[in-house]
Image 1 (spheres, rainbow, N blue to C red):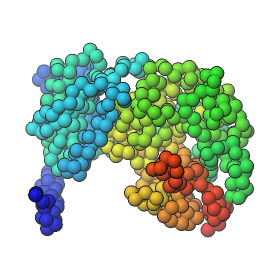
Image 2 (image 1 turned 45 degrees about the horizontal axis):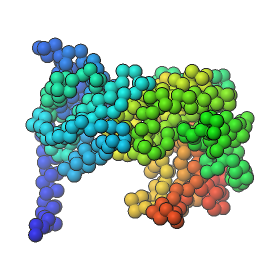
Image 3 (image 1 turned 90 degrees about the horizontal axis):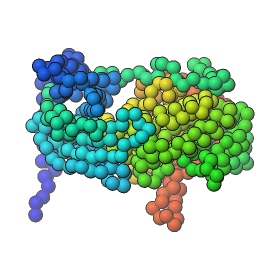
Image 4 (image 1 turned 180 degrees about the vertical axis):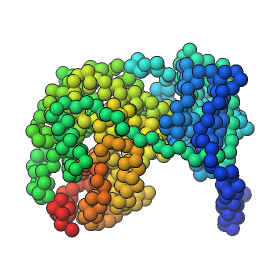
Length: 522
């Protein structure tokens, strides 16, 4: 029977790996080169050299290089082709395998793809996993590229280089795609990665007069923090009224979730009511809905394809018309937490292709513009951490553009310790690094679109008190919405157990802690 290494052998391997890593870093030349260089070749093409990620690749005549997101990926395009190049660092061999296998989970016919090829190849002296697939062309996407070829190149010390091609039906894989992939070579890293871009520096969507006034009141530099609330059934006014009385605060923002559901006569529905009727009922004058629209969870990836094939055009036009008819300001959040693999509109379910979400967002935005829904304050809301935390799933790849975003949302929960993998997290542990990154990354004002603390594993009233003590250190956050609900453990579907109680009115102590925080009482 073959046995694993003895403990001292494992320690020796770990020490040896650290020596090798040190030798690689310490022996490297100074990182003084430009992150990216593009030089002409004799045949009229270009040689792309990425000194920060460590590779070269030969590109055809007419190729255009976009390094605007160079800290995450390098993008290249030529006629009928788009190529994205990533350098993903992982934890040695097991990390390489997890990255490749988990990244390709979507390769299943149930997710709307047809696998064309799955092989092992050698690229630039490295082993590469090559997969090719197709999906149906989408009629609402201009110049859609429904064919894919992806090369995950395994390099020493746990790095994987990904060459991700999208191409039109008129492009030949053998003649146009594979020769480019074959030219890929790894080189030493001789430059620091470029900085991330700052987004939101150009104007967002135009707002009507009343909505612009509401936006200024909520999100101007000197605006105070405004609180919002979610309860599972916002129509239970008694519960909302009790919470508001207990904390001595009228919540101006109410969080509402909607999906692609319709009434019997085909109109958008929210909580079993027609959307336009419910907005008037729940959010009378002076209240602002944070209206969220998500696709249905079934058939991962397929519904977003259907949207981009025009299947839901009538629904979306009616939805946008209902929002416009409401006539008062709306915080509109489309496809939140898109960088989380639990969302069926995430690239995890759509060919590793975040462009699909961008097209989805922009298409729905265009329908709202056509219907005159200029009472929408558009909120772009990634999850606080990408799952999977791979570069092809980075939140910035989902960003639809400044013209479609007024506000950027943050979402992070203290989930408690019900599950073994979870830890109790303070407000600062959840939001400090996230906030610091967002204020550099986005020029738009920020809001916490939904969050809460569980009571499992710690002192929830103390958590609330600590949150209020910390919030003055986050001046760019102008609104925060408490998600007063529960998550369930469905291990036994016949007897689900509350796993994460987020209720604001869970106890008199939680309500009192919130009231004191609002009143400035330590």
